[in-house]
Image 1 (spheres, rainbow, N blue to C red):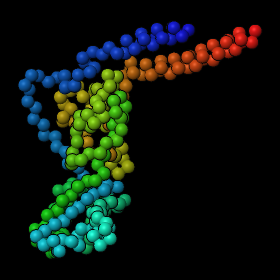
Image 2 (cartoon, helix red, strand yellow; image 1 turned 120 degrees about the vertical axis):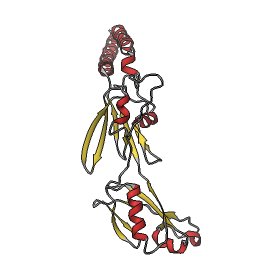
Image 3 (cartoon, helix red, strand yellow; image 1 turned 180 degrees about the vertical axis):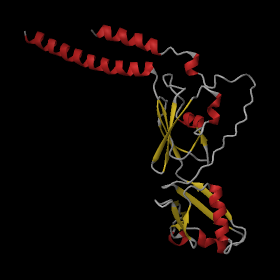
Image 4 (cartoon, rainbow, N blue to C red; image 1 turned 30 degrees about the horizontal axis):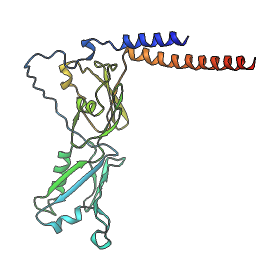
Length: 253
């Protein structure tokens, strides 16, 4: 029985390890030296629970100081002061020094920069405002080599870069039906994309936003081999019990 299981397992492995070019290659419909101009652009917008870093500076450092919050007591206590980030609350607002509540949900970093520049005009001349999303992460699951959640250092990331973080798809990953799950304040939006087509770069989810989830489903061979592995494990366990019982009976006689 054990030999039969091994033979079947090897047969399925050989069968599932064979994949055609159509199932594996990305951007199959592109030609040599083909130029594709995409108008697709990524504009990240702030959401509830985002952690935002905002630093304000100007030609007058003392005038700018009240608009920057720091954690720690500085040199007096021997502790190094660290800037405090702003959490977007359930109302989509942050509590900014001096100015008070600011509604930033749905705004892009540039929108927020303009808003702050206008609100700070009566306090500072030509302020310089640096804005950064601190908890920008994406999650890649399914048939990839390194599934997990990855931090994003810049302001944008494409789905190809995200898959690169995860070590690319396995040979058993379905490339023409990759799912991107996007959350809009509790509303989930599901979009599927085809990695084998050059039209991928024009997809609305080609550029990912914070907390997006990318899921790569297994192909038929992946599902079959997974089912076989489970059945083989059960069969081997049963065979092991039977063999052990037989040995015990023989030794008792």
